[in-house]
Length: 222
Ligand SMILES: C[S@@+](CC[C@H](N)C(=O)[O-])C[C@H]1O[C@@H](n2cnc3c(N)ncnc32)[C@H](O)[C@@H]1O
Image 1 (cartoon, helix red, strand yellow):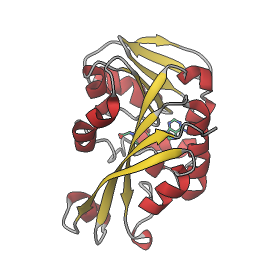
Image 2 (image 1 turned 45 degrees about the vertical axis):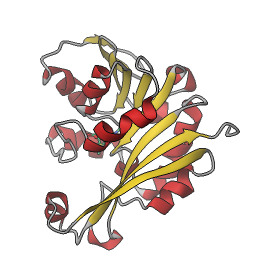
Image 3 (image 1 turned 180 degrees about the horizontal axis):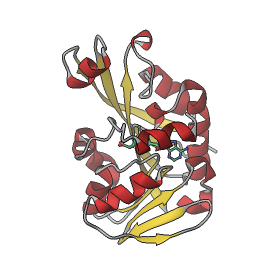
Image 4 (image 1 turned 90 degrees about the vertical axis):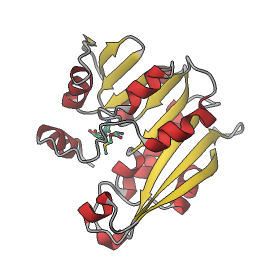
């Protein structure tokens, strides 16, 4: 989507994607992936997700990247926490303790920015992007994440003709097509959201599914 689209969503507070609590799949499946506390977790297109406080509480350093300054400010203010702000280009950094929100465009990140990152968490980032942007998003992740990186990925799928995203529908097959070459893709679970689930109801869907994946960088990938 265009940057303007997201800036408008934040200005109008049309942020139905914001869960306001820790994501259940993150809570249930992070430990299987996370290795050691203290490792740095990268959160692309992070919004003001509480998940980042949760990851921080697990002992991780966290780097989130988010386009909207409103989201970055609200993230700290809503937790009654003061962040140190370091204005800069291409990112203004909001820093509190071991938690940093980098305000700017994900596609401006370079490998040096994330050289200490071993873990990433994608909830509502891949599925926020229209089909034509997803290969570019994955290519950029491939370029900026170091070898040995692992990702916890959460996706959403529904019948394509029932709704216009975001959130967009991303099938398990598409996850394989996007990541399968450079990442070992482990499908953890698929959860059915029936027609009367609040999300499906709100969006007028006949149902939807959420899938969780663990992705591990193939040793021989570029
Ligand atoms: C659907 S929201 C998900 C936010 C968060 N992951 C969550 O679970 O609540 C997608 C977010 O990505 C941000 N975004 C979109 N394009 C971006 C880009 N190119 N760089 C950084 N952030 C971006 C939007 O402002 C929005 O907050």
